[in-house]
Length: 62
Image (cartoon, rainbow, N blue to C red; front, side):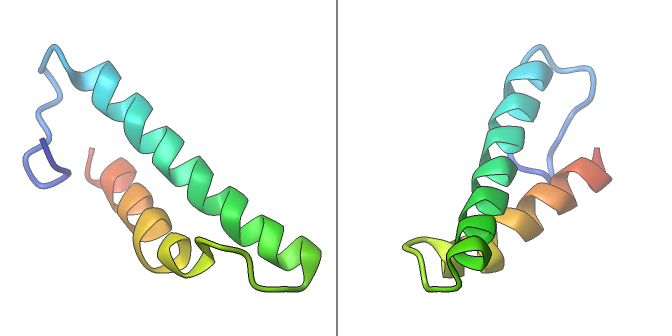
């Protein structure tokens, strides 16, 4: 199941939304840690380029 094929009436709706929320929060956490420490933290590039945009897109698309 992807954001493109998201079906609001699906039985997996809550599970998918939960996974995407955790994915998005992890991305925000990674970027926040990097800003707070004023240094590179592992995962910040993946978070900025993949996790946060995908999470935002998914919640807007649904």
